[in-house]
Image 1 (spheres, each protein chain N blue to C red):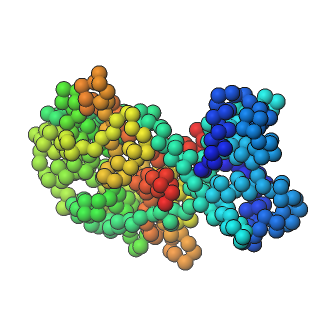
Image 2 (tube, rainbow over the protein chains, first blue to last red):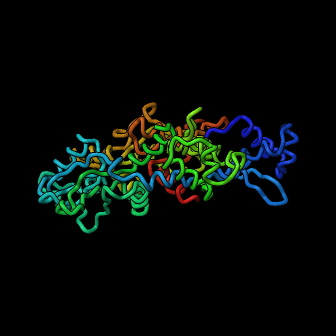
Length: 208
Length: 208
């Protein structure tokens, strides 16, 4: 929220003189207590100041971010997801790595009959490549993480839930699954990554 | 911010009757306009309502995230950075990959005489490994991205600036440099990644 210059003045006064009563603030600013009331209400409700009964105001600087939580909890994954790169499990590891670079992505998803069956990350590819095997002779199906061991999200889940899964499972991205009744289940329709989430934070700061 | 039940009531009234004047809201809630003033100030300042002169209040629901911006702009990288994994440029690519896995990290930083000289990412390692060369015979210095082509941050920069650099340069993490006068410049003291930033978002939502 944008503060008025008087609210900024009040914050400075409290920082320098805390604890300070509303009478003292009013006298220093040469206004009445009634004039100050809305400002003090805004500053305490937003968590910038804390009002200690019979003591006065102190500088708390603990803004409540429940507005941020509401936004992330109401914004669905569908709105921020990006394209998932999909391959079949009988494709070669070599071709998988080339696809990874050409699409500048971190994880490939593996489909079979239009259903998610696996995921291969840069780490999986690196392990295989450092082993010295012929990458033209190993299919993705051998090195991929296989369902049901893949953490995924759905287009209806919130960005907050998806971000929590990414952090809790220490992964870079989640495939987004369409599990609506008309879909056959586990069709990959996108992905959400730490990049998407970092971008949201920047966009919110820039009020886009 | 947490809203009071009166503020919630005001929002509902505005949603149903917009545009609505403060007189009309006061009469519906059976309070005086003076009583409503702080509530209306909070609701407009927070971007939930919009006040149209000579028309009344409308429901805007454009929360301002400048509080989030202030937090990210005031929080220094130093406070959220994690450990950087450092190697020397004459170490073998093979050992670099092993170090990467053992530390479960995405990027290694390369030092020479205590100064940042390079960075090697999973992508760099993967390119080298898929080439089929003997990884025990290639030093990191050959495959690393070399200064001055490394985007970095300092401990004094804000998390917001660091996050912007990560997104703009499409990279996973930044080394954190100590460039204070008593340091010899370019000493790596940590790193900040998209994981750190995603965690900040979750922590803010959970008000940690």
